[in-house]
Length: 281
Length: 133
Image (tube, rainbow over all chains, first blue to last red; front, side):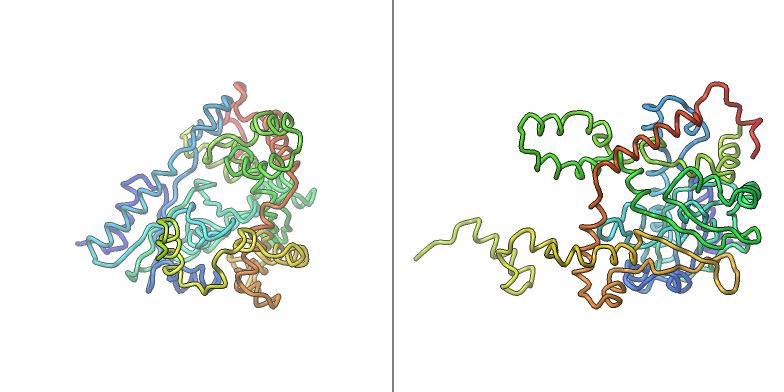
C-alpha cells in the first residue's frame, strides 16, 4: 500500500536525522500570531508548515567541563536547516507545491522573528509552552532546535498536544512547598504561577534573557561601541576597545551552552531526563 | 554642459529605484533610522511593554494546553494601540531593545560563571545515571 504524502515527508525527515517532525496548519497558526508574521506572509497561499526538531546538544555537550570545547560544540543547527530545506525540495519535486525553508535566523527587525517557530512547533504537536520563558519543551527531548518548511500544499495537520509537558511533577511539588520552580529560582527573566498542577501564568523578560545569550557574540561588542566612541581619553578608548570588555563580547555568534545562556534548561527536570535519553546514558 | 559624476549618477539611480519622494533624499542618517529623542523617551517603555520584549501568558478560559497570550503585539498593533505610525514604533523598538547599561552584559557573564561554578555539570564526579529524572 502506498504511503500518504504526510507519511513520506515524515519518513524523509526522520531518516534524515530529525528527532521529531510534525505538521501544523497555517489556518491554526494564524489564530495565534499577528498579521504580517504569519506563514502566508512569507509564502503566499501557504497552507501547511512542516516542523523538524533536533536536540541542540548531545548529552556529552551538557556534561563536559571544558568550556572552550563546549563553546564550539553546538550541533545540529545546520543539520536541522538542511532537513527543512530537503523537505521543501521534496514537496516541490514530488507534489509540485511551492515551499520554502524557514529557520530561527530569519529575523524581521530588531529581536523580532519574521514568524514564531515556537508557535509552529506547538501547533505541530512537538511540545508545549514551558515556564522557562515559553520555551517549547518536548516530553522526550526537552529543549529542541526547530526549523520549518512552509508549503502551499495542504497536509493533514497533527495539531497541538493534548497534555502539557510543563510543569514536571517535581516542579509542581517544589511550587507547592516554596512557590517557585527550578527555572524561576535560577533566572530572574522567568516568573509565573502554578495552580492545580498546571501553568496558570508565565512571564518572560526577553531583554534580560537576550543579554545573557549575547555576552559572547559580536552583537554584544556592538553594544560596547557607543561607550568606546564616547570615551574622550585616547588611551582609555584604546583599552576599552581591546581590554577586558572584549572577553564578554568578542566571540562569534552561535557558541555553546556557556556562551549562550541556557541555565533554565540545565535545571529543568524535563530536560535532565532528555539529556539521559538523548545520549543513552 | 556640466557632466554628472559617476557617483552622482549611481546616487540618482538609487533614488529613482527607491521610489521615495524627494523629501527623503539627502537626509541626516539619524533621521533615516531613528525618531527624535523626546519621542523615544516618551514612548520607549510603553512600546517595550507591549512588544515581545515582555511576554506574558495566562491559562485560557477553556483550561486547555494552549496558553492565552497577553499583548506581545506586532509593531502595527502597538501603533494602533498608541496612536502612532507603525514605522515610528518599529524605530523606537529597535532603539530600545539595545538601550540598556553595559553593566547588564557584565552581570550576565557573572551570572553564568557563578551558576557554572555552583552547579558544574561537567564535574567528573557527576553520574547522570543515578540522578533523579
